[in-house]
Amino acid sequence: MHNDIDHVLLHESTIMSRLDAMARDITRDYQGEMPTIVCILQGGIILMADLLRRIQLPLLIETISVASYHGGTLSSGVVSFKQNALPDLKGKHVILLDDILDTGRTLEAIRDRFVNEAGAASVKLCVLLSKKKDRPCEVVAEYVGFEIGDEFVVGYGLDYQGQYRNLPYIGVLKPEAIQRLA
Ligand code: IMP
Ligand code: MG
Image (spheres, rainbow, N blue to C red):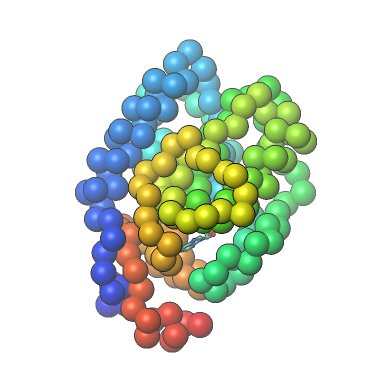
């Protein structure tokens, strides 16, 4: 698994100290509230576990499962919800968690449904990574761990062909690993 990594972009210790700061911001911004954290499966699960334990607030946890990538290293642009029912978010202050903001289509589609269909009082976006690029939609995440270049990364929840999510760091795959699993 580690042998397939060309280089590490963000070490585990770097991610952990950034999460300390993000959790402090969220704790400050939601004083007196009980936010509902909605984790996007599968990519958001590692971030969810590490970030939530640092937030000093009462909170609720929900998950939602969507697919937008369908295997390759380029976003398909189509967001499919894997369940029909949305979590009960009526009047709730929601923080939507995902691993990465790429084109932004996934987070935009989910946020729209949370506000328009589920009746959330507010929805803020929180991602570990945001790719520096021109986006087809105007999506801004309120909480961003790191801005990275427009390259394909794995680890810390992010996968390639379903693998590498359990790497404790963010890394770039060797071209031969991408080809082998394609
Ligand atoms: P978006 O809708 O284009 O923003 O795509 C977001 C989803 O695509 C994320 O939740 C990831 O699952 C996946 N994704 C985007 N960039 C990467 C990457 O560099 N590595 C792995 N998955 C990625
Ligand atoms: Mg994902």
